[in-house]
Image 1 (cartoon, rainbow, N blue to C red):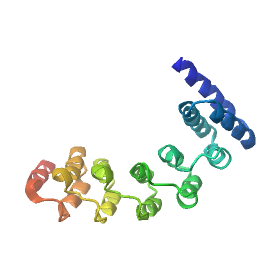
Image 2: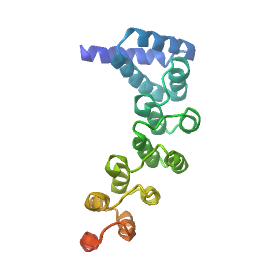
Image 3: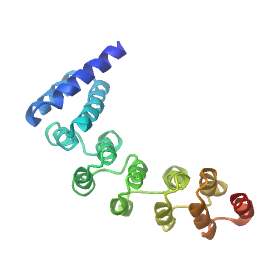
Image 4: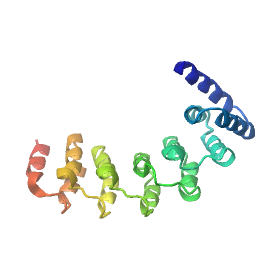
Amino acid sequence: MASRTITTAGDLAQRIVELPVDQAAEVFIKVKEAETDEAFFNLINVTLAAAANKGRIYEIVHVLIDDVGISPSAYGNLFLLVAIQEDNFSLIHELIKIAAVSWTEYPNGVLAALAVGEYYNLFLDVLADPSVDPSSHDNYLVRWLASIGEFSYVELLLEDPRVDPSADNNYVLKEAKRAGNRHVIDMLLRDYRVTGGEEEDYIESDSE
């Protein structure tokens, strides 16, 4: 039964992305009124994937926001994350600057996606929002960016007093070391907040 539901959503999604925007909106509205929230969310996900393949992400997201009435920050800022993934700068810019995206859910996921996409200025814009705490979830953001070697973004986060690179016994440093990111390691070792208890181990191990 689950398999058939997914297939039906896929077929419907393919139809939607071929329709003019007004007709696409009508289909979304009918499904939203007739189906469960889970089924509607499934349709949105599948349609966004189909729209990406057709180059219609911008149009479909605007249909969902403007015509269907879905919040720009719905589903953990799904629209923004998809826009970043698809490198659609116009849509990213609108959602961040114009559409009043809420950062009450998953802000660091958006920041991580912006960093990977090399949207440095937009990263700064989101980080400047007072409701965004880059140290949330045990400094997850700086830990993850250190692990993938995003030097400039780690450097930027270290300037924020809320971010603690020494938390959990220098966990950020351990993540950088595990990934072998020497430039990030050296930067962290220069940070006065990183305690010196294990510095020699890191330096010695890295020079081997």
